[in-house]
Amino acid sequence: MKITVIGVGYVGLVTGACLAEIGHRVTCLNRDKKKSANLQMGKVHIYEPGLDQLVKKNIKAKRLSFTTDYPKAVKDSGAIFIAVGTPSRPDGQANLDYVFQAAEAVSKSIYDYKVIVDKSTVPVGTGKKVKKIIQKHYTGHFDIVSCPEFLREGSAIRDFLKPDRIVIGSESKKATAVMREIFRPIKTRKLITNIESAELIKYASNAFLATKISFINEISNICDIVGADVKEVAYGMGLDKRIGSSFLRAGVGYGGSCFPKDVSALNQMADHSGYKFRLLKAVIEVNNNQRKVVINKAKKMLGSLKNKKVTVLGLAFKDNTDDIRESASIDIINLLQKYGALVTAYDPVASVKAKKRLQRVKIAKTAYNACLGAELTIIATEWPEFKTLKWLKIKGLMKSALVIDGRNLLDQNKMRKYGFRYSGIGR
Ligand SMILES: NC(=O)c1ccc[n+]([C@@H]2O[C@H](COP(=O)([O-])OP(=O)(O)OC[C@H]3O[C@@H](n4cnc5c(N)ncnc54)[C@H](O)[C@@H]3O)[C@@H](O)[C@H]2O)c1
Image (cartoon, rainbow, N blue to C red; front, side, top):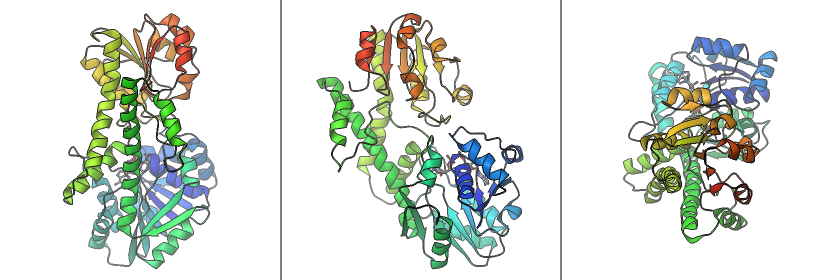
């Protein structure tokens, strides 16, 4: 089938490349001519493992192309996926401007039946609003479908091609058939719901995962007081199939382009519908506090942070991505600087993006360089590389052997044997 994907960010580009990989002819639309031209040459502007190769492979096979021309992109297309950003407004609501702009541009470019698929994460009721926008300029037959995306950056291609489920919010048999045909090569459960349920499934899923993270972080804070080890506690809990082990890793709190904004948007959605979502408000509060847990540990180790050389390892919001949106690491750096610390940072791939966001932070080229002369090293992102560093060598480079492991990544016994004063989260 011929498919259009609007947006070439983490979701749009992965969606486009993966739909091409399963046999469709995909045109990806974006507003930036230079980006489009670069993508057409196989130059990918984001870091996502395997994405470069997948894009190049499908361009070569003539299944994937890039343009900024709406009429050209949507012509002959059976389905149009909207995969543009839905960032937070200052009050926490989802900003739907890009979704509505894309819908309006589509409405002016279509002349026959299309399935318009909302892949962006959007509040309940957005599907209906998009429908109205399209109807302003296009009076023909079309259908709206909500098909939220559940991929994780860092494993996005696998997540897209081997998902736990595909949610299709559709109120038309014709559109449902089109969606089933698109995803036929992907063998997984296809869940058909109404549009509102599909929209809410996405928010509810992210909010639930965020709740698990905040829950285990609260447990970790108790562990710190009573002398339990949160890793052992989480392992013991996770063995219970009703609980499961995923998302029970204590740390510096969740971040990234999705959880913080989606949790806030659901909270706002509940408020606006007259319902006080008390649990979610607590999840947000616990998460914000978790950054401060690291700072309090740093103060305990160093006394005042004024003019202390602190190294932060990791800038991305998680490993295997260059995405720094709502990264806990950036929050921690800002807090360290607020208390007068002199920060040096290192990240295997996110340094370039982070540099633009950070002031007065020295960015080192290697973890070893970053730790030279440091009085404290904080691990803020769970990059596997940090696990395999020669920590004994780092001890020799640092001014004082103090480590706060904000991701509980390292072997604490080994670190203490090496002579570090080591503090994890809840252990
Ligand atoms: N990143 C994730 O891990 C993830 C996972 C699941 C769902 N989501 C959701 O998917 C959506 C997209 O997220 P993302 O991370 O890919 O965002 P992103 O910021 O990486 O990309 C958004 C893209 O949309 C483009 N765009 C904006 N308006 C446009 C328009 N009118 N026409 C054409 N292009 C336009 C931007 O230029 C950019 O390429 C969001 O709603 C997000 O919540 C993201």
